[in-house]
Amino acid sequence: MNDKVPTENPLIRVVARPADASLRGDIFGGWVISHMDIAGGIVAAEIAGDKLATVAIDAMRFLRPVRVGDILSIYGNIERTGRTSIAVHLEAWVRRGRIGEDEKVTEGKFTFVALDDAGRPKLVAIPNE
Image (cartoon, rainbow, N blue to C red; front, side, top):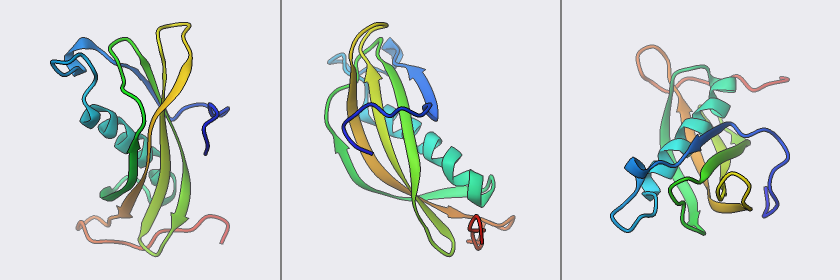
């Protein structure tokens, strides 16, 4: 992914609300990360099934603030599939107001591990193999 607004549909979209803001008025970074984690889990679950654990967040870059009223959209794709893990590259974009400009606000790589029913790592089924 790059600095152009992705053309595919976002994995999730959500409006930043006053309850999500700090005393300064910007949205907490943790709120954004939690939505990215949910979106990454959606992508990873398509391969690993519904039992996953987030084990790492790498190369996280905060570029611009998210503000109350912004529409946050999360885009992502699988970057790597290992024996038990899946790395997903995610980008968070906002639309400032209802007709405002789109801006990338953060990006990062989230790594998930597939889990069996006992909570232990399990092998990931790699598509088309």
